[in-house]
Image (tube, rainbow, N blue to C red):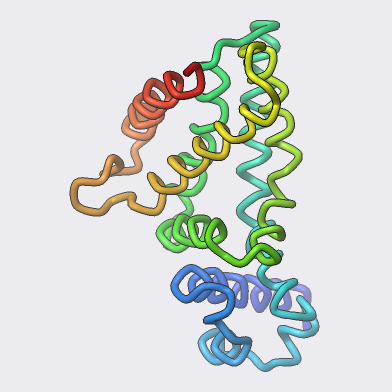
Length: 207
């Protein structure tokens, strides 16, 4: 197997797994389903990923890698411009990158968003896999919110950030549906949606 064909096979498996996990959840998706739709054999899945859990982790990692990078870069930019950025600036750094990245992921955009939503309702052991991939950047944002909102405990801020994530995931998973907040993926529209979400969520973080 050449490197090129190996990478193509990995990508095909990931794409199918992401879609099936999004549609059916972890328990409702079997390796047999994945290999059948990806038109590969079980040995290819075992060779690249080893197990269904590791394949699920790989799907999360692919999304998290770019989202986390975008969020942390935007937060660093905010903090470079202002030692103590406002709640709105921190929220904008948290919300805008995933909107841009997920909604501009081509044919994967719908399933990518739905997969992120599914991750939040999986059993604890599976949800933990997803949460591990985002834990580092959530710490960075909790630190930033803690400096901006010193009257709240760490636990309160963690609870509030979890609600921010829930709103973000809901917005992404409902994108492009009738009456959804997101109707197109132009940079201007995504920025306008991000601004609306920031305005809405900032009040909740401060209350």
